[in-house]
Length: 281
Image (cartoon, rainbow, N blue to C red; front, side):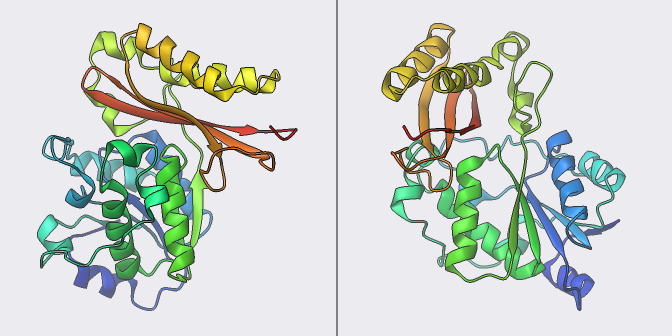
């Protein structure tokens, strides 16, 4: 497996390749990331995983400085998974001049859900992903469903810029108790880790109530949020949206997603559950 640190070296390594599969990450990898590499291997070659903690997607007071940098361990995991190349640039390599040109995600998507609590986050995500796409020129790019809003942002980026890239979505991998695997789970203390699966539990209960015939989502969301708050969580949002657009579910919706973001101590966790709606709401 090649470890590459510069844009020039990446372009040289990929010269002439037409089936490249790209897996963008911020590192501190876990089994969920490995599953994305395995998915990429089934759809393209060579497989390139990028590792870059992108400052543009972190706001004031967020965890950019303390986000774990574990390159050596990450490379071991990627090599074992059959990854062909790791692109691990530093900030100066990715942003050699001030990034005054950025991708502006539509307000309806950028400022909703997680975007309402992380201003500018999705503009930063879209900008760095577009740069990675330009550098790697992939035929396929793989993202995880855990970051469901991010996935839709990337799909819309590809659609609106007419990029010849197929975006594949990898299923969320979970711990035995249901907690979605996340690099930020490492921030959880012992007592917090014991409570962390409650977010998934609240969303699963909401989904079960929908399947049982409940249609008053406002009441369901309030109940789910209250359940978490009573357990000591600080809830950013619980929401039910159309899975294709993230617009509110309406009479035409057949596929929904229940999403939640909440803080446990200093750790912000996100999760979602997709829901097939057999009948319109």
